[in-house]
Image 1 (tube, rainbow, N blue to C red):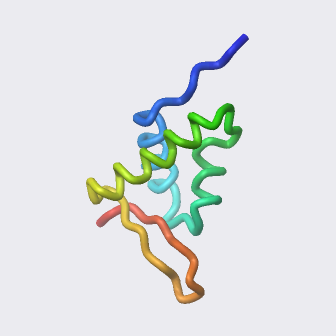
Image 2: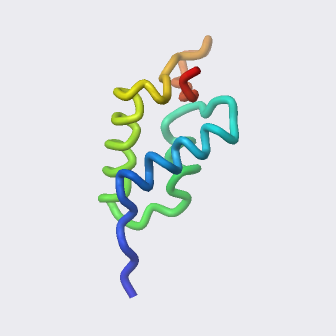
Length: 77
């Protein structure tokens, strides 16, 4: 049985949910692992990329660099 691809809106909600549980998430890879847990298709990864860019452009989340140069994602204040 084939599973449906997770949508961009689903990814946006999951990103916001995960960031509300934590103060920050370091690196895109960690964010991807928390949101998708098991990537079922390349389309899901693509939808996550789009959802992240939408949230950044709507200024619901912020992307910063820490002192070691790693990217950090946080909810906007």
